[in-house]
Amino acid sequence: MIDLSDLPPIPQTWLDWPPADADVEEALQETYRNGTWGHYHGPRGQELESCLAEFHQVDHALTCSSGTVAVTIALRGLHLPAESEVLLGAYDFPGNFRAIQEAGLRPVLVDIDPETWCIDLSQIEAACTPRTAAMIVSHLHGGLAPMPQVMDLAARSGLLVVEDACQAPGALIGKHRVASWGDVGVVSFGGSKLLTAGRGGAVLTCRGDVMQRAKIYCERGNHAFPLSELQATVLLPQLKKLAPRDLTRAAAIRGLRDSLADLQGELTPVVCDFEHNLPGFYKHAWLCAGPRGEDLRRHLLAASEVVKLPLGEGFRGFTKRPASQCRKVGPLTHATEAAQRTVVLHHPILLHGNSAIHQLCETIRAVVERTLDAS
Image 1: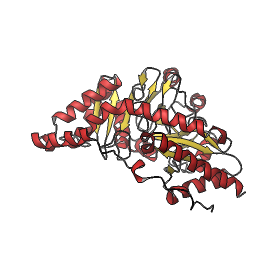
Image 2: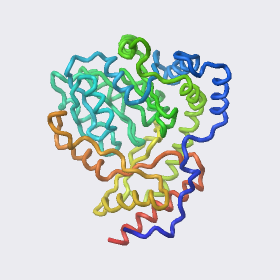
Image 3: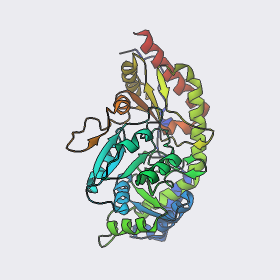
């Protein structure tokens, strides 16, 4: 293992999340004072659903207990035939695979685009069979799936689209928010997310039939997978700040990428179109490339322990799942590589200005250079 003892640790205050926002505290106090904090269907929950629909320019929003549950609700809302196939990137969040199974459907694994970590559209048509009814399209690690092309392809192939924007709330593809392109979209409010309530999620759609079926699925004498009034309370002020904070995060990522551009042979960043889109950076991915890629990944992850470098390993992917659980399309080469060589930057540091980005760059650079010197 390379020596990192001389590197200064990343300050904990740059890593803490959520931030101590005064408006969130005041909102909580107001909800306590007015006594609605324990209501089943309080005014803040209803307001949040209205604000989410308006923010995404969709007709309907339904909050729920998690982003993972939101995917299951979305699939139920599409009313797919029993045991239909649902296409899914072979590198994706584990809950999406399980959500397909929970809905009584069969996952079909498709390779990912190595530039964006999103499902590879060039393989979709060949992956379809008469049983294929839908696909989950996830925006991952700062990469954005090309949703106009996704929807065109889905229309030609007779597929319905669940758009997973849990890692990219507020991101824009052209002038439209992610989670608004698909037949149904989902967002997450998990504890580490850009919009956080500790737990929670939402289903978004312009289709009244999808929302009606979603609500029927959730209704068990009451909403079976609810978001609480307190959770809605803390999300409302955060939603107002999401767009400007997304701009700040994107600017920080651009500076970071520019500073590390000479390392692309070792650290290959996710491709981002900043000219036409506004990516969302809950995470930012690099592929540890080159002959020392696996060593570099191991050293970068070790630096997260030694000097609090805010990097993680991404997902394990689904390429090793048995044939009894899914159908696989092709060798899934890029998904396999992503599972073995991805490192992802966690977002809180991106809101802490130039000094934070400078120290982040210097630490990453030191780890890369020392890994190469050790070869």
